[in-house]
Length: 226
Length: 216
View 1 (tube, rainbow over the protein chains, first blue to last red):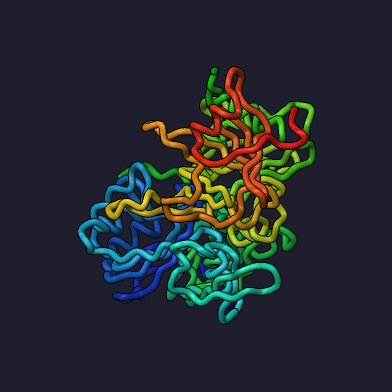
View 2 (view 1 turned 90 degrees about the vertical axis):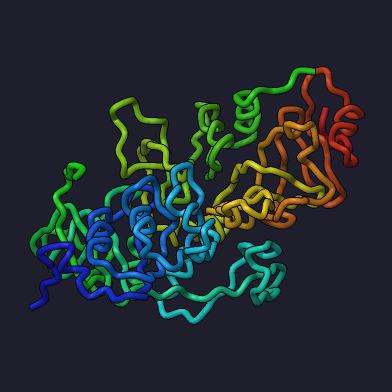
C-alpha cells in the first residue's frame, strides 16, 4: 500500500542532512511552504544550498532560515527586496554565496533536472554579464547560452489538496514553482491545505502526479502567528 | 514644452496595444499601462509567476494572497483566465508567444540594447527576475522610461554604460518627451510632446534622431 501522508512537518524533514540542496517553492508568499520552512529551521540542518525565486522577505520563512545562518549558498533570480534584510546582511558579510539566474532560466534548469535533460541552450542572457563565463552557440539566426539542470535533494512545496498517492492540485498563482520542483528533487515534501481520499481528485485536474511526490503533510490553513 | 506625466505615458503606450494581444507589463511604471487599455479591446495580460487574463486590482478586503502578479501585488482573474507553472510561463515568453512586453529601463542604446537590472555599482545587490527572458522573448519589446535622468542626462545612449539586460531587442521607446522606434538604420521619432522640436529633442538626447517617414 502506498501512503505518503506524514503526521508532522518535523517528521517529514527529519532526515535532511547538512550540506543538502533544498528547493523551496513559492513566489513571494504565494505557494511559500511556511510551516515546512519553520520545521527545517527547527530541525537544524546547516550549510544548505537553497533554490528559490527570491531570498526571503521580512523575518519569516526563508528569511528566517538565512537569519539562522543555515544557508551556505542561494540560487535565485531576485534576491533584492525592500524587506530582504537578512539576505542583504549575510551577502554583504560574505557569509552566503549567491548564484543569480534569470527567472526563466532558473525555471527551465529546474524543469530540465526533473525531465532528465543533460543541458539546454537558451537565448536568455546572451551578451550579458550573467552569461560571461558560459558556453554559447549560434543556432540558425540566434545566439544561445548553454545551461545545466539544477537537481536537489529535497523540494519543499505547498499545494492545495493531495491524496495518499501524492497527487496534487494547487491554488491559483501559488502553483508557480511547485510542479517543476517536485520533479527535480529526490525527495519532495509537500504541505497541503487538505488531504482527500483516493479518487476524490479529478484525474483531469491533477497538476502534479504522485510519482513526483514522496511525503505529504497536512497543515491547517488558518495559522496564527506563534 | 509639456512633459507627459506617468499616466499620460501609460495611456500613450496603451494606445498602441491592439485588440487580441497577449501582453506582459513589467514591474513599476509599465504596470500603469493596465489602467489605460482601451475598454473596447480584448487584451490578455500575462504575468511571469503563472497567470494569463489578469483583471483589475481587487477591492479592499477582497485580496487573496494566492492571486498575485509578478510585482507581488494582489490582482483578480478575468473570465477565461488561466494558471500555469513557472516553466510553462517562461516557455510562453521565450517561445515567442507574447505579442508585447513593456519594460522599464535605466538605459536604451541606439542599437536597441536595454539595461534595466543593475546599476553596475560594485556594492549593489543584483536582482534580475524575468527581465532578460522578456527582453529576448516577446515579439515586440516596448520600453517605457523618463527621457532624462534626474541629473538631466539622456537615458537613450549611443552605448549602454550599465550592464545589459538584452542586446538588440528593443523595438520602441516611450518617454515623457517622445515615442521613438529603434530600427536597423537608427532611431526614428514617431511623435513628440507639444512645444518640443526635433532639433531640441536631439540636443537633449545627444544621439542622432530622424523623423519617422510615416509620422505626421
